[in-house]
Image: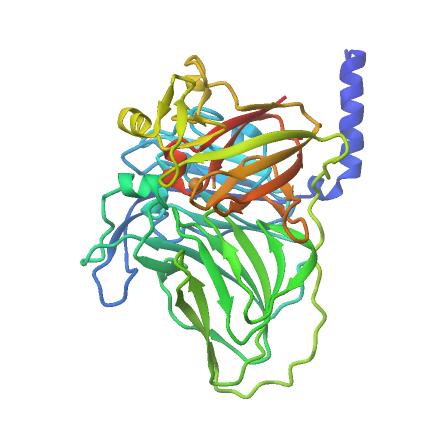
Length: 472
Ligand code: C2O
Ligand code: CU
């Protein structure tokens, strides 16, 4: 017999069923991902590079589903160490978030874990391990997850550039100097070989007159890509998977900055001349421009390219924060070379920078706290309580200030926030803060569970710029 309470929950489930026909008719995609060692031809004319890769490919297999579809992924660990998969930017139930010790047990060598979730937001996302990240991502474990809109904008081609880098020696092998103190306390592990879709960048063939949706994804450990499309005027239509309220027209001198973890969707009209080449420049931290690739036009003369209106993308179902009632939460990024600092490791005594590094290999902090483990498995240790406890359904504004001499792409799991301090107030899951920059991030804490908040420069994360946020 149904109790009144059972009856009510059944009744409301039925209402939800009626209200969400798309969810009810959603398809399910099932795949197996096996991270394991693989030899891959990354640099032409050089020996194959020994990497760690999903299903033997770099980047890993492209996962592509429709919005509201269900994705089931069997992770089979073919590495000699624990791993997990985190679905970067996907707003999903906490148990599927892939953080070892916090949302699941680490997946041991030879073991399997089944991820199963619905993709409620359309856009450009990606996946990567959340265990031993500096080495696992740095050796090639990452892949793209595209969630298609029910009615995608009309383009001639939909293309992704997965941008990353590797630190290679003369024999094209990955150097083993992970978590080197120089990298940890400075800019992170920067590679010496930039990659586009897992290979040394080659010219990118285009046809005059075509319209391309270009999905840019930065999966590097630490490298910030800062791109400029010479001779072209792309439209920026989405950041971190989420459409801008109004697409932004970029001039040939404008740049798209994409820090580790971040994505940008462009719509680019190929308005150049047949047989011409136009360089896509990347700019490094010293302000120098380098060629990332060329847009290489086919010889065929341009079709008269019609002036086409820029298609808008439908917004994802994200709740707007109530800025009037939002609670303000200060969040200070600290540490690193350049300014003296003090921090506490896992809630222990206050240490100066030398002690923190020598005793714990910690160099970065959030609100003066350096966290050395992701998980509540360590909750018994003093200080492994969440940095923030948020009330479910309530609005918050993080008042972030980067008090360091280094840029940081700050990433929150399970939620997206509006960056109130950036033009167009974009939705993002990762925000790039320049040295001494401040930002305001507004969100509704609507996804219950324990969530990571960390710098996506993976060496910074591993050296303390990491915290947990609980929502209940
Ligand atoms: Cu893309 Cu916590 O990660
Ligand atoms: Cu950082």
